[in-house]
Length: 202
Image (cartoon, rainbow, N blue to C red):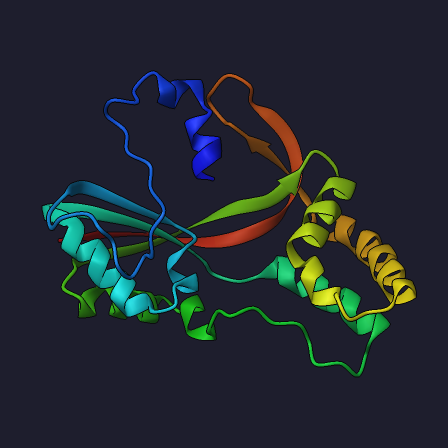
């Protein structure tokens, strides 16, 4: 991701003012009170230690600074994977990802942020889309994202899973638009993803 960001002409034009770095979210190397704003997009629920990650967000914000976070309110894309799994291996434990169900609750999100010192925590909700130009493209993305879960399956099982997933994906899609209001806006299809949008002031 860092490499992709560095390759963007818009960033290159401001290279003297933009710093890109990879580091543990729980141990940022930035000094205290560095930022006026902090954005954590679909990340905090994957942190090894979410509370410590929240402390680092708080620490690196200036007094009065605002943190913006997004958190999925559900995982409908995972449910599609589980449906396909159940069709091929009905007796197998459903696939899971390392995100506790508490993250789907507004009170938990608010609590994590307030416990480290944030005030004026506001949680709204929107709908994004896990999308692609076509249903086949969405299925391809799902297989790329969750394919590692099938490593121990036989070739025949993987083929059957692929076929079943491609059968059920179209029924979960709706039309969506990417890049709304900017040049290059395109129409796609995607899985609706309920998402919490959170603001918190230091």
